[in-house]
Length: 100
Image 1 (cartoon, rainbow, N blue to C red):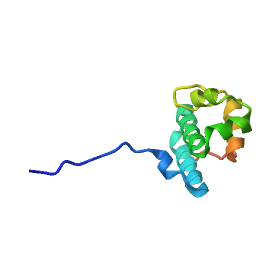
Image 2: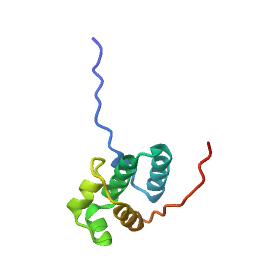
Image 3: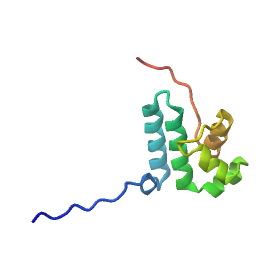
Image 4: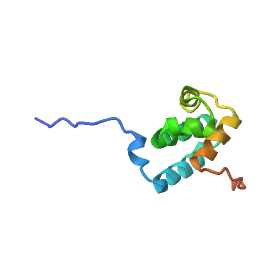
């Protein structure tokens, strides 16, 4: 009789413990996202949860529940919200030419 394989749900938060891991994660997400703003919002939400949503709420001046919704992957955050979140997370959006 074969042994059953036990699996568990993968949680990105287990892999965002250091600033280097967070930086690498965001870099990969921004590269992978293409023109999908929901993908970026969700990635920012993952980093926000890893760092602490309460602290992020204080730093952005936005309510925690507003941040959870906007960065859930189901919300539609304004560009202003994205910019506030990026600033609070220490992330700078830098334009680069697209190489096709």
